Image (cartoon, rainbow, N blue to C red):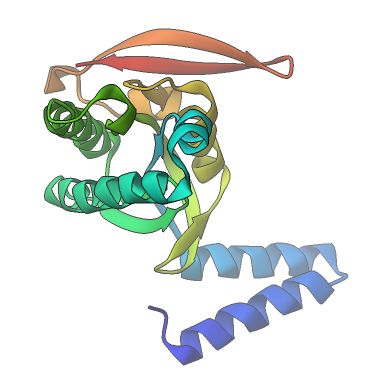
Length: 204
């Protein structure tokens, strides 16, 4: 967690930025904030599928038990691939990795792990996930949350556009994959509110 002095400093910077009327000074403060709390990484958002249907049929306690199973599986798999879980929020997992390759491999491992576990349960008890990955700059004011376009794009892919079993990555993430890594990613275009989103679907 962020130390108290660091948290106080972040809040002071944000308040100064909000109150600054001079454009040049605002720009300087923005640069200070990015310098102190910014980083570049791969962001991965894992979303559980079937919330409405399963909750309506079995109730929220049943679905919460499935979320617990997801969390207990996702944490160790992400860590084993060099990633860090930033937070679990509802039925989502938000994680960060140094590079997209580690994020993609972690998502493949997650799908394989859940497919194996799901052999022991009937369909309505299976944990199925969808994954979105982007690469870029983020702001991380403390260890339990992060912000930025990179987070938003990964969330859009994982939560809204990917179906159960999918791994969708942005062009920025796809271009960071080493050619010899053996990752096959086919172009996949989406239209959301009239805006075209270019992505790639990873085969595994």
